[in-house]
Length: 241
Image 1 (cartoon, rainbow, N blue to C red):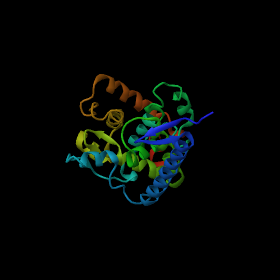
Image 2 (spheres, rainbow, N blue to C red; image 1 turned 60 degrees about the vertical axis):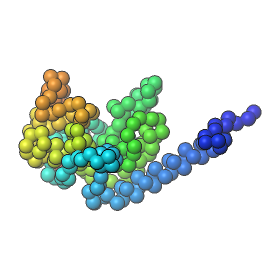
Image 3 (cartoon, rainbow, N blue to C red; image 1 turned 90 degrees about the horizontal axis):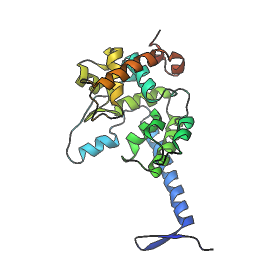
Image 4 (spheres, rainbow, N blue to C red; image 1 turned 180 degrees about the horizontal axis):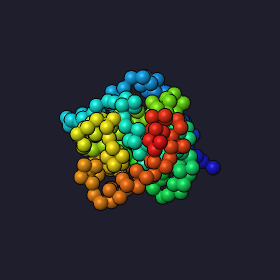
């Protein structure tokens, strides 16, 4: 029985060779994640891959870094309710949600991504979807979960996520959309901003579609009912008291 050989650029690769390359890629990904996590443990990440993608062709973007303590508690609770309700309970990966979507023909969907996974993707990985990138993303999220506190992870996420076309970070989004700092957002404003996260280029929190308004109302109710799930973040758990 002969091992299958794949040719790339005229060079034959055996199955063990492919496996070895995959393992090497995983090790390099983990090393990069640990190095990045240590470098940004206290410093603000200078730029995400999406920001870099705008800068290279000469397109501008807006971001204003803000500390977690200067973000409205209702925004923290609402974002967790929308993006990762089990944030305080997982190790960077929501294994239950991931298992639910592994059987999908297109592979893991966005619904399986935790906030930690999204931070790893935004800071270190290329855009797009593939099984390879998802595997690297999971490995990096586990590394970030080991090095960063939950508060640090959420702060990084809020500051690197894209909230509108070329608008990165919750402070810039709050100022751009509602003309106020992130610390002064109301429950409705926070929920409308959270609805834009899955598709920031198409969903405008300042001019929401009817479905966004309905989703925002649902998020307000959901966030208010989950303080026990926010015990790793005293700032967020203040909402609903």
